[in-house]
Image (cartoon, rainbow, N blue to C red):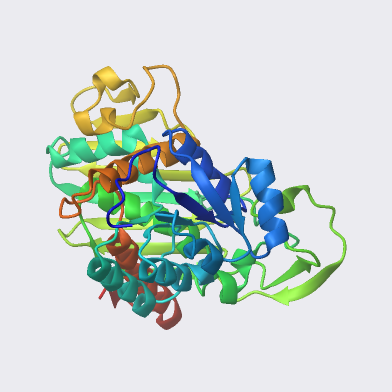
Length: 389
Ligand code: SOE
């Protein structure tokens, strides 16, 4: 692979996992002019069926089969969480660049190992923190970094969903063996925490968290379900399943500059489909953003009227403009963030200079998120402030 000149025409991309998020990876790649060569599933039959549905030329009945294909240069891991570490490790050892879904691993020992291995192998590594790629997330970062907000005082907000509201709602993420011992925090809280660190450049020093599992027993359907599809199932053939992971969390955050934060995360908030909200208050002004209205950024002032900045490339910083493909009034949303993320990752891969600082989230960011989540989980258990390692 080292000698092969990687271009959009020649690069070989393989995607493992075709549930809710694998097809979003495939669409994001194709919108960059990058063709997906193959996809891997748990069995050859499923892989064949999904490859036919998604128009992907090659299919593999296992990750190992995909890794053995010399034409595959980059591997996307869109599999359940417990497979991220073994699959990313195997892909790096096979000399492939890796784009992995979050969380990067099940433990910090595993995520730390992946950071080290990727550096040793000099391979490109990315974690799918796609929310950074909304144009107005990049704009918020530019505004904070250029000092428009002044000193940062307070970061607060929430990430709320309702797809696990009913005790009959089921998904693999509810099983710690597959999803990890953190659920709402690992799945969606991690996006909020990553976004706020991306925008502000500040890391969290210590945390205090409170968790609640409103449904300690859920009804598990007999057949496996893809994410979000449980809402349209008829409730039949369920079995009782004890639940140990959190439906809800509120986390107090002490950031490194003395800024304070508080985040509420829930997967049981009716009406909130997939809403990440944040507000940042600084000594000069404030910013607020809601992922369900992603093309509007609220700017709060004390001595002037508040503003709403609508996404319009002509009004954005160069960084934000680089991830806005359409003129003002032409809304960009969730699928566009995948396109923008892979645009950056593949430009970096094809440019071939891996000494350059990546302009996308890497395994190091995925590992930091794991350290933070570990502290959050410990705090909820021990009911005390916990320092992030
Ligand atoms: C499910 O909760 C999920 O698909 C997350 O895994 C994603 O990261 C988020 O974007 C939407 O919700």
